[in-house]
Length: 500
Image 1: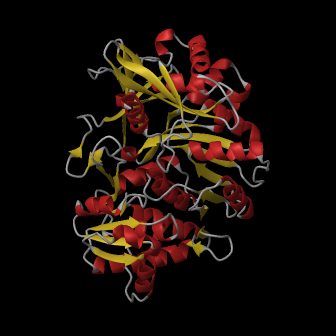
Image 2: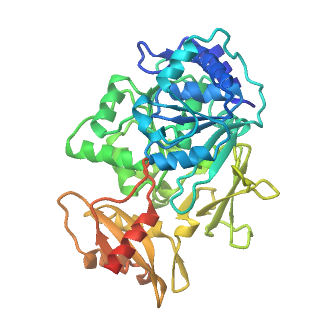
Image 3: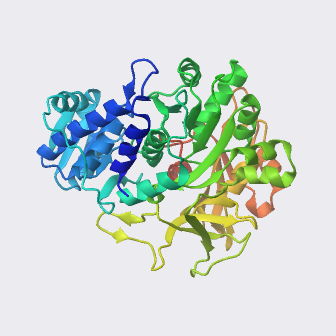
């Protein structure tokens, strides 16, 4: 199935509703479709083979996303926090790119050797189109999206998602037109992240109005959610942590209209989600786990599991640290280093299979095996009931004296200390043990503790072999814009400190 069908269904089902923007004066679904057709004509007229977007997640993005598909080219959203040199390098890897950018980001694309136009210029040219493109070729095999990986450990890979992958994700996880006319979703994730793309398409298919917040801060998020009568919201863990910290210290009520809050993109500390559950007692929480190569979410921990975790037995609380169970149409399997499937509670690499799974990269082709399984490179395990527990990236595993140690286990224990706001655990080279365990710790405002105290705290919960050998106190941890820990930078900072 082609994404164009998603837009056609949305227009036929709820064309008069506001799709993006304020409930008064926003862009309706019918107006969205009109702009898509006219913008597709502009893209086709310029002979582009890739549509590059460098901008914030505003109403221009869904127009360009669907217009690119209708014009028969993939959209390539780029991280606008990259340097001009990196933007140039990434665009140079694409065939016949057309670059559309926010006007205020013009300096980022000045080195690009390609046709460039601002989003305002695209809107103006599209408005003059006499013959809009009214439909796509409908080919589900054509590429819809190219997303560059973060490239924190190597050269960024260009992941390819075809129309059939994104459409399969939406069709199997979202009920068509299930939103009421009063539903509104607050989105703060950028367009260059898979969650920004999948959330856009999902909300359109559901018929929900989308309010896009390009700059995040807790007071602004709470105020916008209240003023726009937001019913659903999507955040990353660092955003939720800042929201609950703000509400705990400054005060403030949960937006009265808010009914559902989804989070994902990085591990969620137990302490943060438990505080959030108490501050938002009437809100349904959902943890969504997925990858770029799988068209976003492949496992979900739903509202009932969150409530049981807060009020139920210890086993229920443990599942609060899980990614939930597989979404419809997706299969999960844990394998050892030799590719052999493992049983419940055994840790190995997570493999995933389903119609929404691409596992394909520009210039490399698919990396799925002969039976369609994609290796995620995440270390994980499944409990007997199919709940998925992620222990981190395979290459993040610390090997100390031949023992494999998951940083997430140590981090979760240290976060239970009253003085600890956040922590990152890494392995550092050691001549005797192979690697030692090091922890970078961010303290809560006004809190104090010591390396010895935290080591004793960890040792009381974990074996001595999992107690950090070194602890450094830092003001903040290095994160991506979507709240993912840059663990390699933490390890590098330890190495630099030791060299001094």
